[in-house]
Amino acid sequence: MYTNYLLKIEDILLGLFILTLLFQLGYHWIIFARLSFFKFTKNESSFQPVSVVIVARNEYHNLLKTLEPILNQDYPEFEVVVVNDHSDDETHEYLQDLSKKYPRLKIVRLDQNLNFFSGKKFPLSIGIKSAHHETLLLTDADCQVVSDKWIMSMQASFQPKTEIVLGYGPYLPKGGLLDKIIRFDTFMAALHYLSFALMRMPYMGVGRNLAYSKKMFYERKGFINHYKINSGDDDLFINQAASKTNTAICICPESMTYSIQEKSLSLWLLQKKRHLSTSGMYKTKHRILLMIYPITLFLFYGFTLALLLLKSWLIVLAVLFSLRLISFLIIQKSALQKLKEQKLLIFSPILELLIYSFQGLVMTLNFFNSGNKWK
Image (cartoon, rainbow, N blue to C red):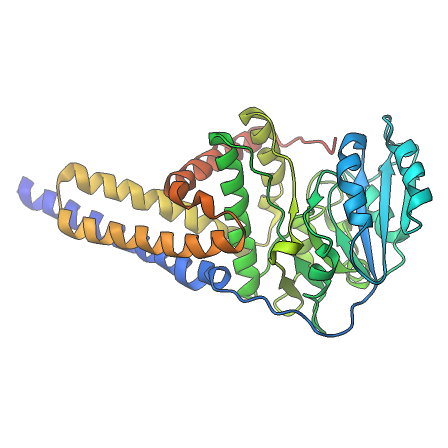
């Protein structure tokens, strides 16, 4: 009697193990493979004028490194709109000096904190309103372009029906375990939102590297639908504005913008807490699709451990576990190469478990405390 009961449990566990495996393989080959095997095609039509919009608050030291490479872009017609959001450092003096050298630099100074929106949305809206051109290209004050073809690459992704272009904004490598965790977490987020965009289901973008039309921004009423939320000037806006026909991606190396990592695990977790605070406001279908992968991942490993402890179906277990691992590495290798993070491949199975563990921790923290700040 006991033996039959145990055999039934083993069979049920095997069935659940196979079910979670199928979900994992489905994500690998139906969704993530779209980015892994994506081939970038430039739009050969004439390049349209572009307004780069940057919001800065007390970013003097970052602007010293990041602003001139943007002003020196190899592009026929563009302007750079910098919104100085009532900084109290040397930002204003630096921008004034730089504007004498670069006529294309347009400074918008907010002297008083009249931020009726929460977080970055009000100054960003002012910057967009002040932009002269229809095509907007957004980045952050601490983001470094690695090529003078950044504007050209992002603009080249616009097709006749395109209103949004999602770029990639990785972090500069600096070595160590935390470095690998942060970079892999950024990569996995991009693997999701870029793959879903290629699947014609775009759900978010990152403000470090994002382009859209000014007309669309006003047609979607800007940030008005979530102005009370501190974060979300990028992901919540794209979640409401993107459609299956108006969104493209750009991942060529010249289009990437690099940021400096947080210096400690606690600071990075606070950053993650802020970024994940908006995910609960995504459309229901997006929330479900984003939850399935990590849930089935942990269930897959849980059922693997249970079957190992029961010493049941060991050969089948070994074959199917290897199948999932090989599938994962094939997809990861190609996607990591495209996003210039191929050195993370060897650590990727462990890093995947770590980042989703941290994500679960951060979401728990968000449940108990939803507050966050712009600066």
